[in-house]
Image (cartoon, rainbow, N blue to C red):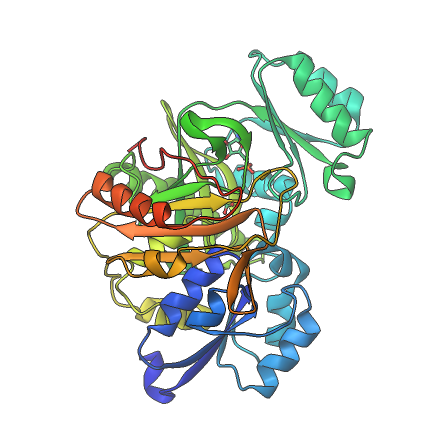
Length: 430
Ligand code: AMP
Ligand code: GLY
């Protein structure tokens, strides 16, 4: 076992959102973990672990912190430091770190790289082409059979670079905004135009060490701001696990036709993938199709998924970082479903208000089988203030999805701040 050599591990989690609080909380409970740091963290990660005041993309300072504090394992939450190459830099210094290399992080960092990899691997995805010239994109859009077209900026655009268009005119305008009006800066100077898929969306996360693939239980995000999937896209307003729309047969298809060829092709191409492979899928009538790959845990999917994980997360991530996932025993899951409801600041996903005092966290924290994960929060003068758009991920387990939902919303009802809001229908799709 990975732990037998050294009993007391020190772990550094990089990031500051709800996903990172869930990671800190879970890792701190693992046997053999002495201490979990979080850089820069939020008010919640400083309770379950200890915050370190270093930004998540300040790779140099993160490395010297890891060295001076004898960190045994660094776990990277968000995509930005991965795409910048944090894993390569840590490894070059002999520091153990969980996540993909800079080259492998292109699966999320460049949608063109990702789509071309899927094409090479024969992974089912929407028909597409990539463009840097507007005239060529317009001709392609004109020649499409259907009116529904999706236009995507190639690079990272904080989740905003995807336009799902219902007419060709709209699609051409989206392409022009990216290619000629620089709507997303350098990230949008190359674009992907692809067919619009219909179906139910699910998130499949797998832990990978370059070779071995360990799928986690399924989950479903709720990307739109308002109930019934209306309103603008957000980072995710809630999630539940497991996703009832994925049965055992569909999961087998996803592993065989999507995860295995992707990881195999990454290896063959000389960019082996290690870390979390997050496949955002559309379950279409023709079968599962990949909408996008991310190279990290989903936020808020990590909150309900990690709450249900009964295996030792520190051991899993440590073995993955060492290329030894084949030694891992089968994962154990709490059979009870979990539901996470995101509470957001007034104005989110647009510009939002910060600095309001959050009340009721203690009351909510006393409820059984539930946990209030912090996302955009800071502690100040013994109070907790909102400091981001998505503020809390209130998560609960229950005997059934409706029971878990009810427990999560009971906890939500205890918490207030000026302008707080949330969707009221998380998990109803199940
Ligand atoms: P992405 O960042 O690529 O996951 O896209 C963000 C969201 O846009 C997805 O979660 C889907 O809801 C939607 N989307 C992306 N690609 C497509 C597609 N080809 N067809 C329909 N919806 C899509
Ligand atoms: N919940 C969507 C994401 O993490 O990208």
